[in-house]
Figure: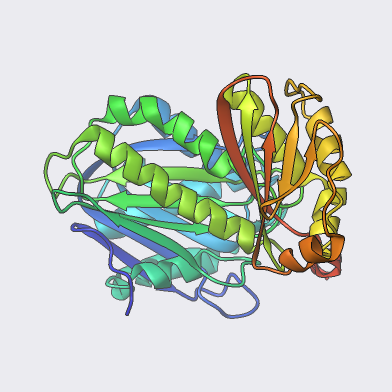
Length: 384
C-alpha cells in the first residue's frame, strides 16, 4: 500500500526524458497552505544552482508552497546558463500552480557538468499537475539516481499530525553532506524560528553521520516543510519524531551505498564531546581499510584503533574498549577471542562496532557500508 503524504500535501511524478533509462525523473510536491521550513545544504564551494538559490530563499525567510525535483542531471558546474535554467524551472512550476516562484524550492541530482534538457524539463513541468495524487513511494522513486530502492520513513504524533520523509542517496556520500536529498513533510504547525534553531543539530546527528565513500556532493540538501494543517503540536515531541524519521532515512542511505552488501554502524561512547564522538565514528565508517575488512568478515580491530587515532578525538588508550558484533576484542590491550566465531557474526546485514574512548561521557553514532568490488565497477562506468 502506497505511503500517503500528510494532510495538505500532494505529489506528482513522471518520466520527462531526463534519464536515458526512461524511468521517472521529474517530480514535485505541493502544499495547500504556506509552509514554515528549514533547510541544510552542502558546504561545497562548487554547490549547484539549486542549492545556492534555496539558500538565498532560506535567508529571506519567505514561506514555501512547493518543491520541484529532477533526477538524472545535477545542473552543477553549468555556469550562468545553469542558474537561469534552475530559476526557469521554479518560474514554470510556480506558474502552473499559480504561486510565486519564490515559493518554489528546486532540487537537481545526477551527472555534473551537463546542461539540463530544458525542452524536456519545461514540457514535463507543464504536464506535471496531471500526475498530482502520486504517493510518497512514487515521489521517492522519481528522485533516485544510483539508488537500488526508494527510501521513506514516517512518524505519527500524539495529536494526530504526521511526518513523512523521503530520501535518495547511494554514492558520493560523506558528512557535510553527500549526494543525497532528504525531504520531510508534516502537517504539524511548527514555529519557523524554533524549527530553524533545532534543525542543524538534527542534521548533524543524522545525515552528517552517514558516509559511503568520503566524497561530498555539489547538490545535497535536507528540507523539512510544515503546513500546519493538523494544528499546533508539542515542539519537543515533534523534534524528537523528526530526528527519528531522519535517522531512519540516514541508515537507509548507508545500507544502500553503492556496491554495499551490509550496513556498518559505529557507536562511540566515553568521548569528551558529542563532536569528538561523531568524528571518531565517522572516521571509522569512511576508512577503506575498515570497510574492506567488514566486507570480508575480518574482525581486524586494529583498523578501528587506527581510524579512531587519526580522527582527532581524545582517547585514553589504557581505557579504550572495542567490541565487534558484541564480542569484546580490545580493552586497553588485546583480548582473547574466537576469530572464526567473530568472523561468522559479521556475516550479517548490519555489522556493529562499539567503541569507548575512555575520556568522558559523550556519545555519537555514524553509519556507513562495506567496500566491495561492485563500488568500483559502478563508478568506473558511471558516464560511459
